[in-house]
Image 1 (spheres, one colour):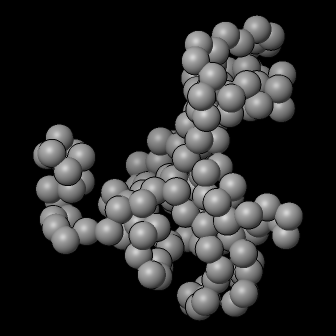
Image 2: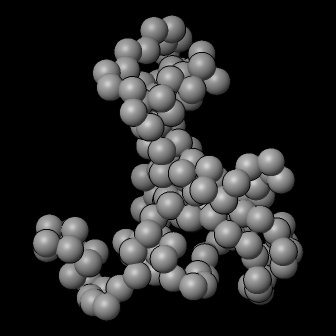
Length: 152
């Protein structure tokens, strides 16, 4: 991206704070936020969806939200000291006490991508798909296998 092939970097310019895998502790709660309180340990998905556009509301595909925001791309990322995250009640999730911040942060990108591949594109639920082939079992491949196991 820093070489110039990502439009979002051109749009917001430099300096910029990268980092798209995010977890942390809530230190302030915005107006209208009801599901979180100061001190909550939270994980944040890579794609912050709106919940009201055609893709989110009608198609039930928040991973391709028409109004999405992405930490580290369209807004400050996880290397910033603090982040203000939009639509917190929709996009944040509380981390159980036995899950580390590192583990939780890794889930936001890998499992969002795995969900899009296996559930939305692969249609494991809708079309009765019962076989999934994964070529390359790194972090994303293993996440696809776990997603397939959960849904099929």
